[in-house]
Length: 242
Image (cartoon, rainbow, N blue to C red; front, side, top):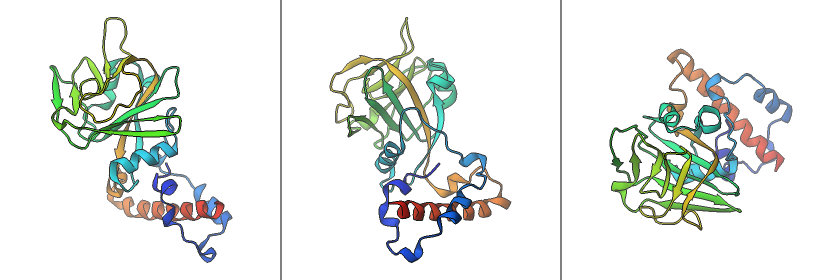
C-alpha cells in the first residue's frame, strides 16, 4: 500500500528537475514483486484521500498504514464475526457506509476491542469518531475519556453510549446508532438508528519497525532498504506528474 504521506505531504517533493528520476527506471522498480505483507488491501468504502485525512488525525504526521482486518461483506455481518477478527488488536479504525446515502462514518480505537462477558467501558482520551459527507470531513473527539469505548459480547464496535455503535437485537445484528453523548460533535445531521451497506475495520501500523515485525532478522534490513528506496521513487514520480 502507498503510505498516506505520499498523497498528503507535498512538501517532501524536491522542486529541482535534476533530482527527478527517469520514469522508466521508476516503473521498473514499482513492477518488482512486493512481499506479501506489503500488498495493498483495497477498501470498498474509503479511498486514499480519506486514508490520508484519518492518518493525520491519528498521528499528526500522516505516516500510518491501514491493514484490513475485517469486512462485513467478506467475513460476515454478525457481531461474533467482528469479535473473531478484531478483538485484541491494539489500534483500529472502523469505517462504514450508511445505506442509501453518501455518508461514510467511522471511529478510531487506540486500545482495542474485547468480547467482554458483561458491560464494560474502556478509558482513553485518544479515541475519536468521524464522518465524510459531500466533501466535508468532521472529527469528533471524546469528551468523557472514562466512557470512550464500550465492550460487550452483544455489541459490535461501540464508541461512547451509542455515539457510534453496532447493537444486537432480536431481528438483526446490523442495527447501528449515532447519538452524541460522550463525543463533542455530532457526526450525523439526524440521530438515531440506521443501516449500513458494509463496514470495515483496519489495524493501524504507524512505524517502520511495526511494518517489518513479521520479517526475520536476516531479511529485515534488506527489505527496509528496498522499501525506502521505492518510496523515494514514488515520491519523485508523483512530483514529476503534477
